[in-house]
Image (cartoon, rainbow, N blue to C red; front, side, top):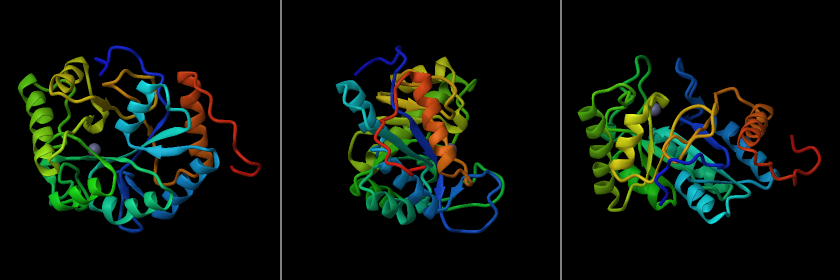
Length: 250
Ligand SMILES: [Zn+2]
């Protein structure tokens, strides 16, 4: 695999967190309603796009076969990924990557102040993988890696990978920086831990294999916003969107 120094002209990657119809307070704006996710995925299909996991997307990029693909990612590993997002993804024949905070399986997002939501148990993580989705690491404790001391960074990226590989009995190629907070040392630690790829938060710059950009999808983003994000990404990496949208798709 590529060492990751080159900027990747990769298709857009969408970033979701919780998918839930709950009306509880959502101060961190991490919850998208499943009907909204359904509309987003239907829109992708109208544009001839198929959502796939981050690692499947990069393997397609490596082969020069990524046209028509979009990455789909879900951060933190909320239990509603399995109960709510997976059925919507299945309806559209799409896969995704779920980035699990390995030290919080079966617990909650206690790194956040405010409302607590359940994180998948080890069994649920296995079920998500068995349903065809990629499980990636989001560190052990949702630690902010940028500027952290090297031993902490190494432990967070290495231990979380080992824990998830034990759960899955399979390799874990994908990593995601909590808060999107990364620096050169963190990216190097992720590469050294044996990951194949890592993604950040935000679609500001085309990144390399260990700093892949993503488009944050907020709770109220409708189809027009989604299209604008895809178009902006396409412009930045100079990849045209497929021009196959039928009339009235937007
Ligand atoms: Zn997170």
